[in-house]
Amino acid sequence: MSAVPSTPRANPSSVTLTATPTTTRVTGTHALQSSPHYTTTRRHSLYGTEDRVVIDPGSRVWKVGFSGEGKPRDVFYGDPVNSESLWSWNRATDPSARDEEDRMLEISIERCMRSVFHGSLLTDPKSRKVILVEHPLLPLYIKDIFAKVLFGNLQVPSVSFASSHLLSLLCVGRITGLVIDCGHLESTTLPIFAARPMFPHLRTTPLAGSRFTSHLRALLLLFGTYIPPPANLSSALSSRTTRVPQEILTDALVEDIKTRCCFVSTPLEINRDSMRSSSPAPASESDLPPSSDAAMSESEFSRASEGVESLSSSQHASSEFEVISLPQQSESGGREGHLQMLPNMYMRHSTATDIHLRVVPPASQQLGTGRGALIVPGWIRERAAEVLFEGGDVDESSVAEVLLEALLKVPVDLRKTLVSSIPRHGWHGDATGLYPAASH
Image (cartoon, rainbow, N blue to C red; front, side):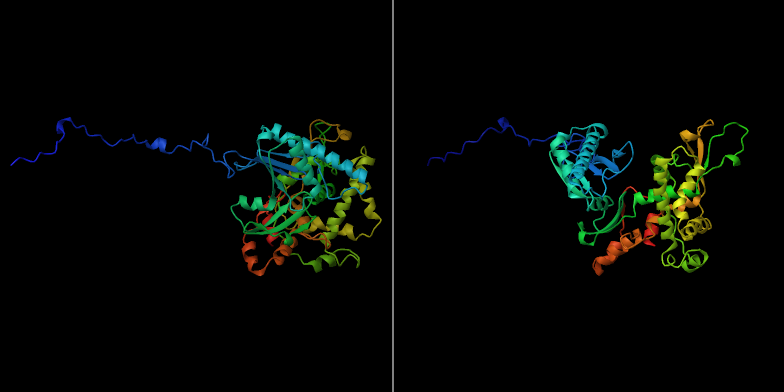
């Protein structure tokens, strides 16, 4: 019987075993490298690898920067020469005058935009997308001018308009809150819930930075002290003390005093009845709060001082104050009593110290050598911002009243959530003590 042939097998000695391919493991230092999609390891914005240009154009102060950074690159005045507002809420009624105002505004905005890209940020506008921070009540013709300048003149690829209140709320890591915007022209309160602005409940008041500036200027003219430079070393200090000349209080000096020296103190609990009984106000004026009358009279003093400055700029400081007092002398002495009552009422409760500032003497009084000294009383530093919390008529509610009105307009179940988060925004929203005074 024949044998069954066996299956041929390969020689085990000639077989080469193929090992599984392996790679060298990366050390710990290289494992923390950023993605090759990014060229740097810095924190990028949510819009991708390219940070967008953020422009916050106020009527007076502009803030610009990039979206991936924590603070603005530059803060400057829209009108660097006069430090005035680029626009206002009062437009000309004549069509030709209105067109001229729009052309001048377009020229100013174009100059500011070119300064942003070519001076502050040093970037090409054609390669950068823009986020424009807008006020909720910004007029449409101003938005059209911004879009016309950005698209037509600078040729940016895209422009996104974002609410200033919503962005300020997102910056503090919240999506719900009651945001206060204290700007130059007006103060605005807007409730926001779940990142949705509730525009029907928006409330505004003209008591803002412009009124604060004129109020502070009037207080310094009435109650400040100026010491001119000595003509010789033997002159006594008491003999050189005079009233504050109007030429001393430039816009730059008043702005410096307002931002660096003034703060908001705790509200005073003063009996209004005792104030009315001690003041010589007539019966027609006793119905109004004394503080409102004082604020009105000080504003009238500041407006009168502007007219006097243009007519008689070469007069002496004492004569200027005599001219300023003329409009008030024709009326009853009630408002003058309220003016004189301001230092008597606030000095007793003031804890702030007086500040001496070195200022350039006016051209009409440059008789001595060196600089003069402006003495800012401590109670003015502490109580100048009271004008923002003293409401006038129906159209001029205080900041606290606007805050309360907006809170009462929202549904009841949202009030507790909104009042727990009240961020402040704007050039004057960072004043020390603003939140406790508004909450009070």
